[in-house]
Amino acid sequence: MKRAWKGIGGIFLAGLLTLLPVVATIYFLVWLVGLVDALFGEPLRWLLPEGYHTGMGILVALAIVFGVGVLMQAYLFRRVFRGIERLLLEVPLVRSIYAALRDLIGLFSKDTGPALQVVEVTLPGTNWRLLGFVTRTEFNDLPEGLGRQGDIAVYLPMSYQIGGYTIFLPQKQVRPVDMSREDALKFILTAGLKARPDQASGRKPR
Image (spheres, rainbow, N blue to C red):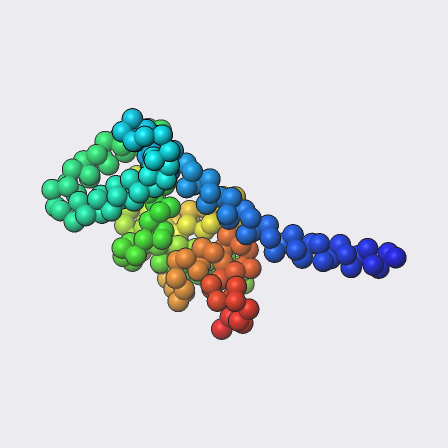
C-alpha cells in the first residue's frame, strides 16, 4: 500500500512539474496582455462604443512600438531621444531604474557590439570557473583607479536572478565562450539546467 501511494505521488508530482511552468507562463502572458490593453486602451473608451474598445489597446501598443521603431531610423528623432535619455539619467532615482532596465534589455539586443560578450572567469587559486558578460572595456568616465590599463569589467549573474557581482580583472584572465547571450543567461539563471532551446525537445546537447 505504501509503495502504491508512493507511485501515485510520483505520478502527481510529474504532472505538477509538467503543468506548473505552462500554467505560470500562460498566466503571465494573460496578465501582461491585460495590463497593456488596459493601459493603452483606456483612452479609446472615450472614442469607441462600449464593448468595441476591448483588445484595441494591444493594437495601439503595437502601432506605437512600430512607429517609434520607424522614427528611430531618422537622425533628428535619435538626437531628440538621446536628449530625453540624458535628462532621465540626471534624475537620481529615475537614473537607477532606467539605466538598469536599459542595460538588462540591451543584454538581448543584437546591436551591443563587443560589449556583453560571454566569457569564462577562473577564480584565482582554484579550478572553479564562472560564466559572465563583459560590460565595459573603457573606464574613462569612471573615478580614477577604478579600472586599470588592460582591465575589463565582467558581470557575473547568480542563479535564479537573486543577485550578481561586477568584477574588474585583466582581460587576459578571461576566456571568450562561443555561446549566445541568451543561451548563457538561460544557463546561468537556471543553474545549468537549460542552455539551448533544443533541450526542451529531448535532444541531447552537443
